[in-house]
Length: 273
Image (cartoon, rainbow, N blue to C red; front, top):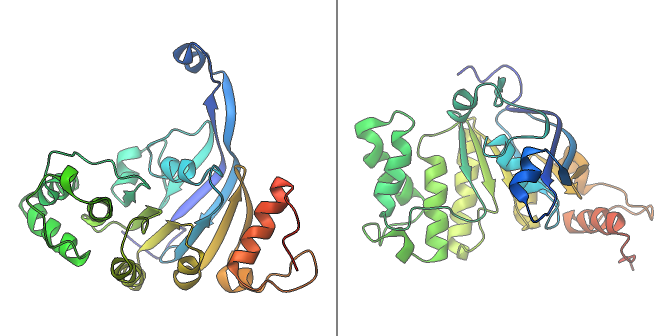
């Protein structure tokens, strides 16, 4: 793939509505009765080779957006392009370039880690190299023990590592990582940061959602903050950290910027001193 042309992700007018709660959910879906708008007219462009931090409170629509980029959820309106490929028109073509690790691992509990990661790698043409590649990625994530045990027997933190390995096994151009460090021990979190830095150094694009704001400050070139399904802020990290609040004072960090935006949207109390 030519990495020099166009953005890694281009999102235009993206919306997602889920059917209204009803006694007959299938009928509501068939009749396209729209309920809650989880994402509202999102426009977003992420350059190639950068690490993007996607922030927002619970229920802001972050995971929904990531699922639409990954081609798991179909948008109600709008388009998603990955390296110029419209995922709505050529899902398989776009997905070749994507590695996705959801917030909650969705794993075959009876398979062992190596077989499971290799199984996913085989979908991307790794063939006989799949097992060797799976072991290398798992080792790189610090998962060296319990590889022959069923994944369901592993700790939650190690299941997260298996999920990350599945996202990484085919060395994709774009990584979608939803709360990747939840459940990881401190040593594994440090290792994860090094992995993200290495991905960027190799020209990969990382789309990272996290509630750990210090992690986002350290790793991300730019930051977007979602509130109630809408993108309320999008800018380079250094500019976000220099943002001036409604009181005319410069923000004291990403946490203050985040709280000002989310509390303002919810009509919350002034948290300033």
